[in-house]
Image 1: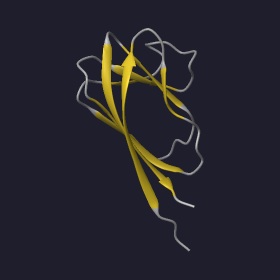
Image 2 (image 1 turned 90 degrees about the vertical axis):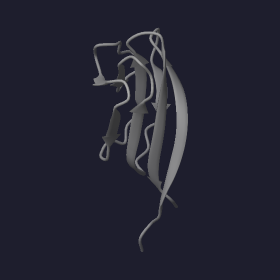
Image 3 (image 1 turned 180 degrees about the vertical axis):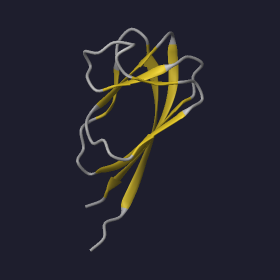
Image 4 (image 1 turned 90 degrees about the horizontal axis):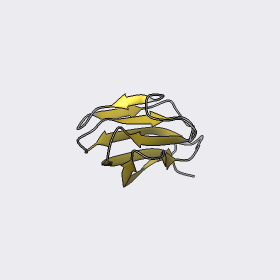
Length: 93
């Protein structure tokens, strides 16, 4: 029996002073898409104890997609406050 995939969409304000958690660990996550709508680079982090320079950089106005990772994730901005859009596809029960 196949399972449906249900998208969840959200927006986040990401700051440069500390990481913002955007995703909890979820083994049912199929994929996620981030779009940095700000004017400075943001970074995707795998721990809240990391700082800017430790993660995967995502340039302004550039999408980042991931279809394998099910862990928790945080974002941090290079400077100021950046607007980020997120879509997550998960299996429905």
